Length: 77
Image 1: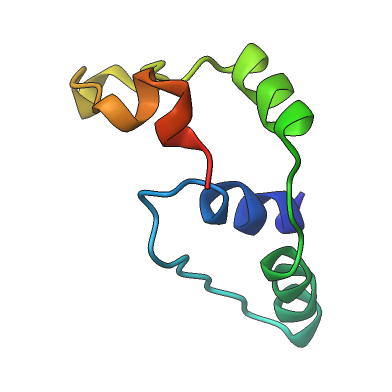
Image 2: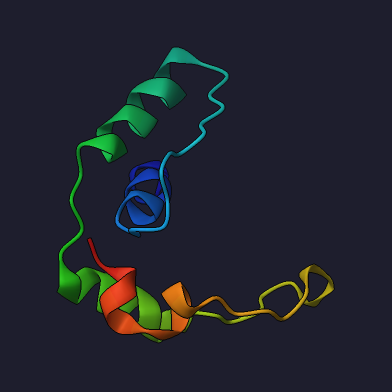
C-alpha cells in the first residue's frame, strides 16, 4: 500500500511532486519503491471504479471538482 500511495499521485499529470513523511528506514524504503512504480491504465481504471474521480470522500473539504478529475485524458500522463 505505501507504494501505491506514492505511485498513484505521480500518475496524475496535475501532480508535480509527492511529499512523503516516513519515520523509519523501512517506511522510507517502501515509499521509494513507489516512486519507480508505473501504474498502467487498467490499474488506474480499477482504482477509478472503486472511488470515482471527483468523489468527495470527506464532505467538509468541499465539492469543487477540477477538470483534471472529470476528463479522462487529463488524468493520464
